[in-house]
Length: 112
Image: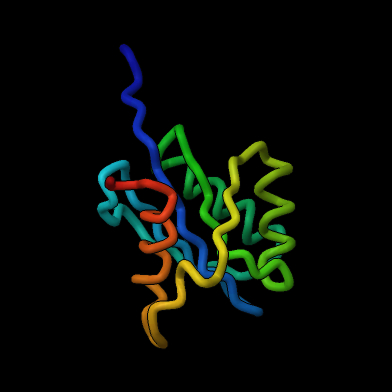
């Protein structure tokens, strides 16, 4: 049986103690969301979760390396594809984290 492959983009909103991730499909529709801690152990759990969402994954991480450095390192060590998104692309107002993550994903061309 042939495996169905589709692209999943995971937009990451990085904070000091947590990271929230929204997964969108190739049409830009939200597939799933998860909030995790910032340890390597948390990141390994995130990778297991993301593997269930799709084979072809790209991580869209807001370029705030002081908050996302360890996550980026762990994702790269696992062979994941990362794109850093300039913070200006996701600055659309306070309290809109989910929208920000989806904007990050769409800026990568997802759903266009």
